[in-house]
Image (cartoon, rainbow, N blue to C red):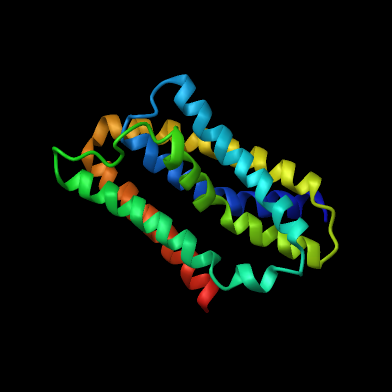
Amino acid sequence: MDLITVILIAIGLAMDAFAVSLAVGTNGLCNNRRARFRLWWHFGFFQFLMPILGWLAGTSVAHYIEKFDHWVAFGLLAYIGGNMIRSGLKPDVTSFRSDPSKGKLLITLAIATSIDALAVGLSMAMLRVRVIFPAIVIGIVAMLFSVVGLFIGNKLGKKFGKRMEVIGGLILIGIGLRVLITHLF
């Protein structure tokens, strides 16, 4: 697989991480270096890891995963997006009870944004493509897109406040719908 193709795949996969980072950045909870590092590191690491796991799984379990991966991604993103919308519409409610760069929420976000990368890894196994170099590129691009998303989201959140949480929530639900629709049709 040539470098241009790998980069284009990486950019496509990183768009979910970018959008989620943008949405998380709007709430202002990831406003210190450590929190931002944890978020972009996990997004990049999961984007790196999932193609490898998909490749390892190969064709033996592909048909099992394909049946429900899109529903899992949709459910996770819709739930988090719904919380963000509720938070944006009610001044006394926050979209995240705690820092989204910690614990179960961080892992949930990282998995939700990287399920597509698992499918890419499965495809690479079927095409007999070596996975390590593409996985590294995919992880690095996801990290970079996450950094940019957090930065932009933080700036927009400071300027537009709670309205950006509603927009961020709609973006997450939209990503979930896109994942669901592209897998169903």
